[in-house]
Image (cartoon, rainbow, N blue to C red; front, side):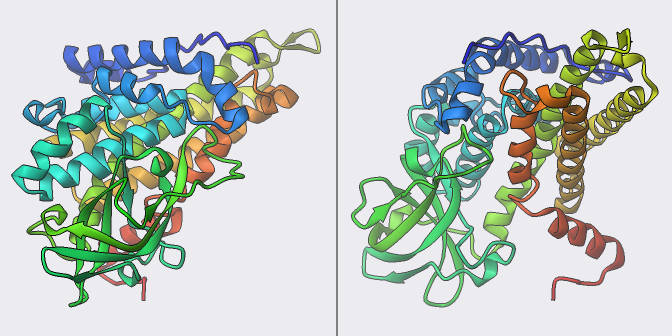
Length: 394
């Protein structure tokens, strides 16, 4: 497949750039330029072949896309949360799988090691993960426990200076290429504990997940633990219960809220350009009322989501954002982007299903993003419980 020329122009209907600092805009521009140069020309080919472009890991590490909010002394970027969001927006504008790689590395691997890990763990792992020398993954979801992680069966038992880990995780981004895995398991008291498992530990395997119609350019796999001996110094010392993994997911969901709107912006930009160029009945289809309705609704929903994401970013920077507020942004971003991608596909007609345009790839990717890290329905119930005080989960 011939490389696609990336003509993307970012929509900013309410001049939201005026809310950003110069540093934030420079960071966004650096990632946008990277995506145009390195991701857009190759991503359709990798998606069609269902292959992960592993070479981008070190590229993204060098660009600072891994752990941008982690202090620089530990291999992160020391940046604010709006900068992090903008980076995820631009990466997902290229491909959801590329953003997933960065989200997992930063929010689900580096963040828990920084927040919950010992100083020795931070020094050992974070610089290598931040640079992209090592890729990491996050093991919470199990074959029979997705939306209800508290029911997990993966477990550890005490064996002196180490623990014995047994169980399995699935739908794990980065797993086939990961050097380390942050894994959540129940101890003998039934408490959920986090620990760092390294590739090469006997009994630890990462079979790849095949035949996906979504996130085809992302590496997905399982984590299988068969009597894996893990040193006790690899256990997070002071965190117990679901608070640990859910704290990581809040950070990752924030990145998803921004990322999905990147995909929406890309589909809108493609549809707008196509509608102006495509001639039917002797005029551009952009001149017909129903196409203008689609485009006008797209830019309206993108603008609303941009404002929501920016406000949640401000609250994150101030340490005031609640997990429930982040849930709202994640669900809104996913739903908004999925609807916009479907409408963009309609504007493109038959061309919308081809690899010549990114729209169908974004559509398929978003079917995963709308499910992972809390499904659409689960996030609705999180908001519902927050506003009513009543738990609908049980």
